[in-house]
Length: 478
Image (tube, rainbow, N blue to C red):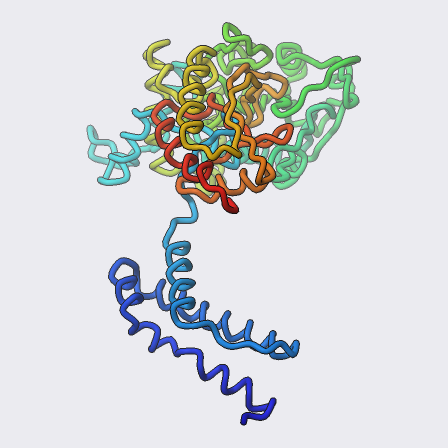
């Protein structure tokens, strides 16, 4: 009989080697469908995990035996399937947050998708002038569209709005002061703070006013020899109410002209269409800002514009030219796929109201409530037909959000499908939906899992029902 000292060695020797497992018929079939490196890695990790568990139990004085081969093979198969799935993959957004930053913000229009596919698959005129046969500028693909749509003299596009702000402040105010209201020193997702970006850009922050009230005289008194820029930041993800006062962009532009100081507006979301007819007030358009005579405006491409991730600078031509010549411009330049999607998105804007209906972000914001109700009813009926008696599937009126740092106080009426189980708490059911393929991301409210149909596209309804139905039909742990 083996001594206690010998027992661990005897047990560990019962665990098969990597080579033995790789020759098993089940694993051979897995190798036919997946890369060898991935399968070998899964085998090694599974066997090592088995060894460590066995040793831990032995140290605790627990009698144990190695798992049988079929259990190991099953674990290896599951590990391979998990590893084979891309990390960045599709989800169905049932949260009701239209511009959900964590879920990729704005989905692209069919036109933008087609342009990305073509430019990704083939060579392109990214920086080539076909007419002259010489090197061209990638900026020319969208600059004319931006100037036409906004009325600005010139435009420059970079990889995101944070980069646009960084480049602008570095170009205009490196080593000098930037005056900004305390009430506009915002922080957005990912701990992105305007003061931090300003410092990294080389500008010196000069705060004026208070959190809730800033007046023109605050700016006037702060302007001095070291002042390089007056900066106004759109408070994209919050709203101060009550005893408040702020300096309008037009007032700031007037002051800047009087004192010979350029004025910059960080608009954040960058709406190119007026959303007021749809009950969404308080979000200025880029065109409105340009009309004030502001020297420079920066905004995002993947928020209310409804395109890909991008940062856009529009304004006076002389200022845009200075931005172009800054060495940082190359470090933050936009890539060809984003550029292709952005060009296609902007061309849709030129088509007017009919074209805008194809931009998913705007379509979701402006979607008639009755259409959402019909969509929700289809989902409710489809899920109720499959659900176990312990699961209650209902439909209720709720509110959606625009998200993405846009219109923070706006709540859009919507319809949700609500899921309640007498066997499982809502957090467990919600987690089960996230484990599906594609994953379904909803939200929990009042002990129910809500699926908001404003952010589920019509073509996703059948997929949503087919994905969630089997989970609701299951009586065991989801």
